[in-house]
Amino acid sequence: MLSFLVFIPTVALGIESRVVLVALTVALLIAIYLRYRRFGWLSILPILIALVDVNLVYYPVGSVPDVVWAFLLGLSFVAIKRIKLSGALYGLSLADKQIPFIIAPYLLYMIYKENGLKETIVYATTASASFLLVNAPFILLSPKYWLSAMLAPETDNLIGIGQGIGMVSFIGYYQLSGTYFKLMELFTALMLLVLYIREYPRYKFSFIAFPILIFFSIIGSFLIM
Image (cartoon, rainbow, N blue to C red; front, side):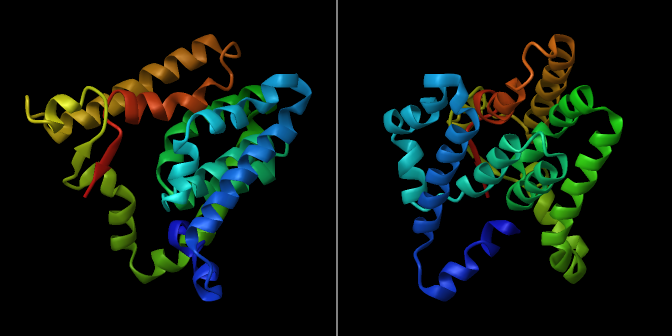
């Protein structure tokens, strides 16, 4: 629900939404640089990617709002050593869009391995609290419609577009059922979890890329109503 709440102040002040989106994109790149500047030239890698991949600029300029949850999620990683702050930021990213939910098992496992069970519970509790704080008014208004909206990407009849194995169905070569996509998501997520646990800490932060493997590369880039 944060996906539209964040723009209410800009509308009230007569500011274009794309200004906020571009500002968040720039702020995220700066935050990553400041957090990892001790790694030398690698710290400017996100900025170099932004200069090479124009989509990182065109998306917010075109009013694609995904940078809101990406910004909050990125800050939660930057602040990962401050458990409560990181958890609160992660919860806010969940309140903006469902995609960050997919990394929850891997993220909680990392926190457990690095900080123990107690801190993992604190993280999960803080994240849940910030998520519910944003969503509470909508849950109270209609729990049924709120839950339906939250689960819509998995339960509604959606039209697939983009890249991935799902293109076989999207462009009409062979019709795949919705069950196929759900099972592929589940299977891929579980296999990645097994791999992550087995290879930890070798690929400690690799889970950041897992949504790409689960949602985009295998299933398809987008699902629309």
